[in-house]
Amino acid sequence: MTESIKIIQQVLEGIPRGPYKNLEIDALIEKWIQNGMILNINSLVKQPSPTFELPKQELYVRMEASKGELGIFLIGDQSSFPWRWIYQFANSSSVS
Image (tube, rainbow, N blue to C red; front, top):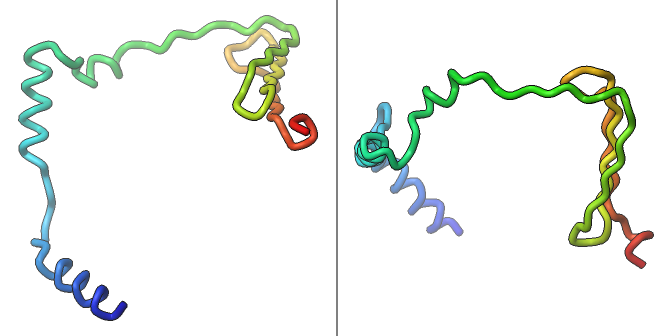
């Protein structure tokens, strides 16, 4: 154990100090952007996010999960954010 700590200390002492920048990755990403393989993140940030209005009603959705049924209960109040939501996960009582 003490030898492992000594090795780690030697490795940490060998790491150069100062800011770090991976120039290879930056060049690769710039190449991908120029070739149209990926989008520039600034163009995605400037677009407004889509919003929708939840109607004033209660909604329960259930789906199959790995250990049983997963239930999601939403209560809308005519806004873009639900007034209340509850997740109901499977537990040992529903599995046995």
